[in-house]
Image (cartoon, rainbow, N blue to C red; front, side, top):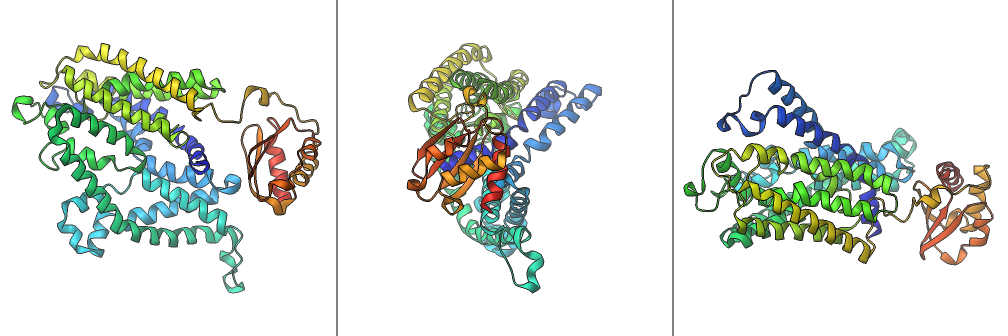
Length: 491
């Protein structure tokens, strides 16, 4: 769990890059609907408004489309000791290595049999996804933490220390790629088979699809199900048929049923859940800063990644609940006859333009469905967060307002660090050093060597013992200076 929480915190920096992209794309699609709907829906792909809108869409898409690279670098830096950029560089090297080795063009040369397997080919077409970005980030940071101090023979001394990290990450990535070469198409194919199995289940099947769609986003495997339901992988194509101007009479299912349920969830459910997180946050300013923009992105253009990645690793149980709510609302939406479609995602922009197409039905029902989604998401998230004390944005153990007001009694940061180090049993007893806004966070070997009275004599505000292997020293907003000196003493 600690690993997942650290992973979640490392994602905060790249996630913070995404809200502006969603806003730019939302404005762009409003100005240039033909970029989304195409001229088949009656919109013109010309004129100054279209050109400006198209420009904004591409500006926003530059980061949204490359979110996996942002994750790789963000995790590579965030999970590296000292948050060193070397870990980010190693993660980028890992990402480039894995995605290049497992690109369809290269995989079909290494294993020619894959070229004749459409499911396997499709799997490798989708290899550049956030899950691989997360794997690359973990590889980069772990290689940094393990090998940053490696000493090589004199004739290889140029590559000693940090310079060998990217090399080790590259070798590790080759091994990981070999494993994925065999595992990835099997997993992807199993999900395609799952999609085929629930096709005939009507509203229940649509609900199950929405549930698995959200559940698989952290792993980048939702593409497998999307290709079954949205595109013509096995003859369905809910999205392509909808935007081609067809109706339910032209296909064998209720056209739009595999897209409609996302609208109330993304436009109203996400803002409701975000409000619950803000209301339950200890640090409301920090929560509002991230969640308000994430909710706006979800409503305007259906970009939900800034919201989802802000808590999926911090509170995985809550993310499971989130996926269940999607499944329930998709089931209800299909039953009540609301039909809408999207070519980008289920935001207000897509809803407006898709409502002009022949397959659209009862689009006015987004109001009651949206209100219900807002209320249900809000109540469920608020109850779950408080009942299970889940660590959503602004609810981390550190960074409370009281701690931010803490004043360090001694401004000799080197001396403070020396006393704290002595109090935790010396550098031999320290296995990990980190800090947040207010706390020095230490992992130790032997908890019996910790002398809290000694630590407090350094002039700090307090000491917290979350577990036998953890010590957190409340320093206040000057913690970074103490942490820097502490790290120097432990080298």
